Length: 236
Image 1 (cartoon, rainbow, N blue to C red):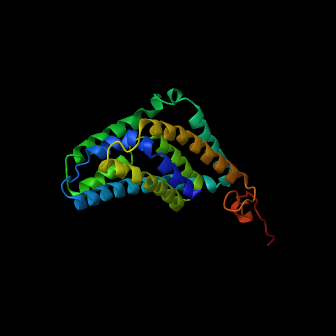
Image 2 (cartoon, helix red, strand yellow):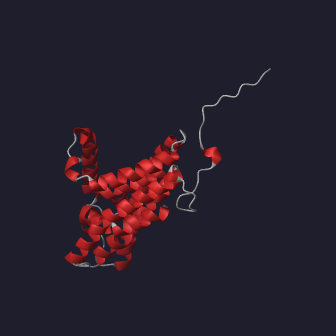
Image 3 (spheres, helix red, strand yellow):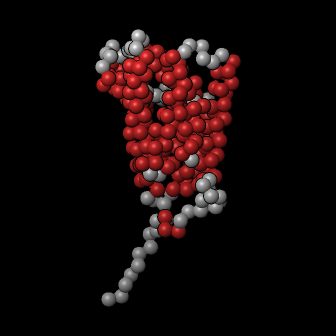
């Protein structure tokens, strides 16, 4: 399942270009020195991966908390169903809810800080830019976070998110060095593949939760993983 995060990042790179591409173009990179430019870009990506890892660990704790109640398999099935529903339900029905207002307020502050950091050229500025970039809203990031929750483990959740971020690095780096990398028709075709792959990942999580005994895909749950409410009474 961890490999699905990497593939999701690779396929979703074009979507990331639409969300984070402008930030990549605005990076205060040293255009005269390629070695320094590459180092600065590396630090920026390191900041993004660090942010994804932190978020993944937090959501992994959430998944672990749910797993302690013996719902690991149900959680995996639920995450898979939710992934598929988020692809099928039109975005207009998911946007604009008042419950998201506090989140938008926080994001406004993140964007403000991001704008200030884009004016600097120090190494720590590139790390900060990448880190803040990782917290910007993105549909694919939300999908990856669902996967992190389904991992049911903080370390695996963090690793899942970092692998997702790693998958976006090649294309996000390539656009800095070259323009017109993909034709519009190719971009459109790849964009069409993204929701299809998200549905495939959702199905994989559902199959994983069913415990069909398929090695590495849908292993049977260990007998000791379930939580019971049985109380043993011992006679004195």
